[in-house]
Length: 265
Image (tube, rainbow, N blue to C red; front, side, top):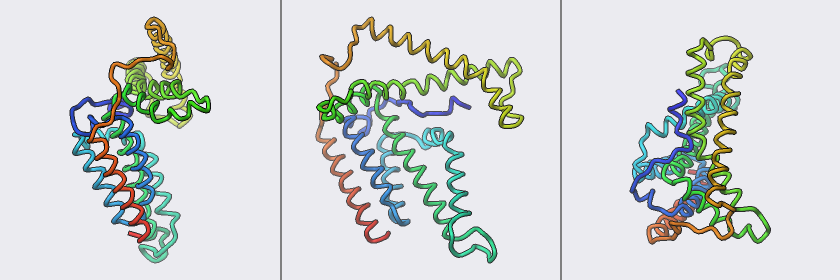
């Protein structure tokens, strides 16, 4: 079950999207999110959906992997849809019903927004290695160093957190399988009973996480790691013509979304 979660994973490849500079992809994700929140009508949601589908095709990321990543968010998606269906005023579907046509339309739009938002951010992590992502974030946040913001430390922590998500998920799955083999039940009983059943999982998981963190710290110290000052990189990030083309496409997409919002489509 937990092995299906693809959050934080990187799928190596040699596609156009994979070859883009990490800074370009980070900027495009911000542009994508801003554009998505400008969507006001069905035409604009359709445009964002087409843009997302095009990115998926270019990156060779399958729909199956996206759906795997969406599984943990299923409860939030369903809850958001239900809240919009039952609490949006408008024309009732059947006279006397609480459910309205406007509520259904709003629910579908909110589902689309959440799914597209998650898909767009997943495409970033699926096509960018943790090291490239860290370097890209650090380069983009370099101006903050002038006001004494610990940019390198912040980006390193974010990268490590992202890197260890799949590892911790795999570890959790192993611990739960071991507990089930000993007779533990995680699926029946009240909410309090289920929470109590998770205690034997959380304790070894935290112990394992602290052990891995300690091993990583020792490994980094043994390689003379001392922060960002004076650090060299084997692969220097650089912009290529394809990055400027991608940024131009992103700018055109954002302009189109603002125009569609202005005309309410």
